[in-house]
Image 1 (cartoon, one colour):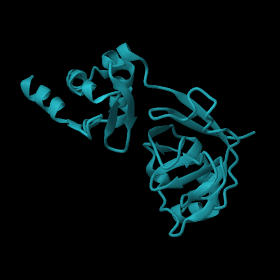
Image 2: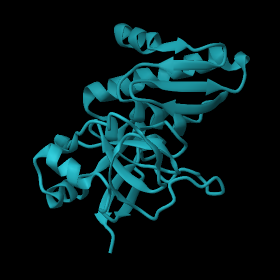
Image 3: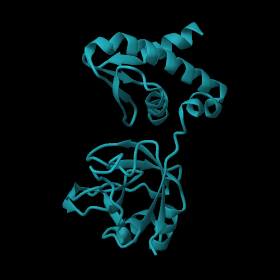
Image 4: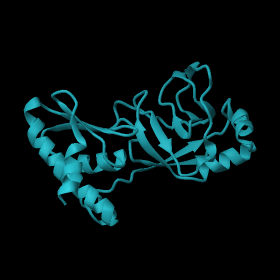
Length: 223
């Protein structure tokens, strides 16, 4: 027990005087638990590829928040070890699952090249993309740009060696084992396989991002 508690406390490191960086377990799971706990003094919880950043409302909140984080992370680690996560912290603090269905027209400029790189037909690529559930591991690059991962590793392709100067909003893309939907016109080097008419980011929507960290994303062929 003492060793587990020590490990949970040690994974919480200061990041300036108004934030903590957490390096423990699955960042999306950890962020989901911490958000649902609504710890007093916490301003925001931001998962990344391997860490979670917890920002504070004021420097004075640092010590009580650090103690609360240690307690929650110790409990989460124990439930993970016991295989009881689904009945423990996550179920008490709210479901982590948020499901988004994205209709796609598979007409991307790189679809044929992706199929060739993977030794597939374009139909095979579409079937693989729509035939698996994707999870938003973290959000970055631009507001609403979710990095989607899947247990099906067949669609791992490299980025373009030279980025496009403008990728259209709604472009559905692949790169490095991830899929994503560009939320707005921006430069980008991912391989474009299609597009969707859904709005990924709307500042007037609550929440603004259609796809948030931890969300399950299902792609389907647009009718």
